[in-house]
Length: 141
Image (cartoon, rainbow, N blue to C red; front, top):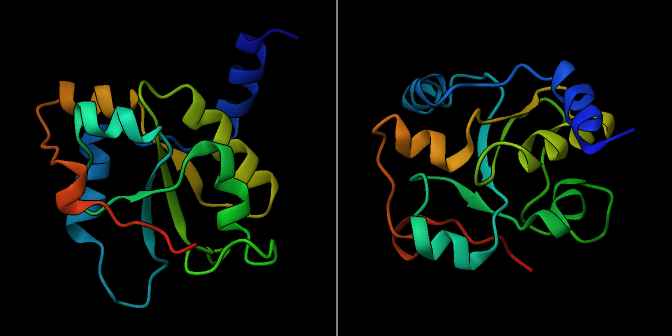
């Protein structure tokens, strides 16, 4: 199996969201009893500094994503997700986020998915980014 095969398999189980769809989801998300929308940027901090972030996103580096999201991991203080949360994973171009979202689905987070094109796709669609220090939600621990 190649990495391309692995990516194809991962994406087959995802309902990926386009930049425009994510912008609309973020605009309409609210406390109406529906599952929580969480946008999680998994890029390294230096990438965040270089390109900026989607306002309102959280930062959890990919290396520790599963540990921080799993409520039973013992390493998720303040960052654990509910299994019905809508988790949208963001990376640079939308490749590693697909693999991460697929792993989260395997853990039981059925609404985990990723952003098509990653942050580059977001910016390419003319959607705004902000400096990470102004908008980034830092997880506890």
